[in-house]
Image 1 (cartoon, rainbow, N blue to C red):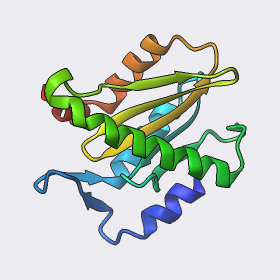
Image 2 (image 1 turned 45 degrees about the vertical axis):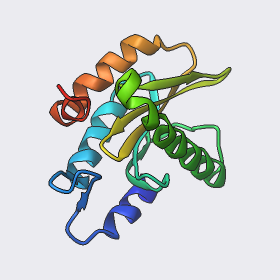
Image 3 (image 1 turned 120 degrees about the vertical axis):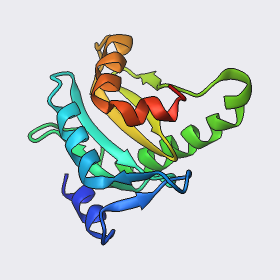
Image 4 (image 1 turned 30 degrees about the horizontal axis):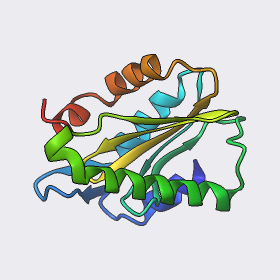
Length: 150
């Protein structure tokens, strides 16, 4: 969590402009959303990433490991943000991505696009991906729905 808070301090007004100029993401709000998501027993890590993979808010659950070094975690964040960005080129034909998941042997990694940012989760390997996605989407609330045109 400290890495997200350090990143948060870099933004003097705690709001950043998203890809839609009139929309702003309140980083303190997303810090709270990430903490709320971390209350789920099956989630180890929840963070808001910018388009380059920089951690803006959130982090790991206290006392929990994500099985990666800080350098490896940053690499995963960078790659995930890049993949989320690349998926947008098919939005007109296929619709917006609501979430994406990768089930690995030891963990599940999920992404939830929010404007030009992304929420990244690391969850337990045996999680029901669709049920978890529904719980997370309900915690993200209205801003997530606006992104997908609801």
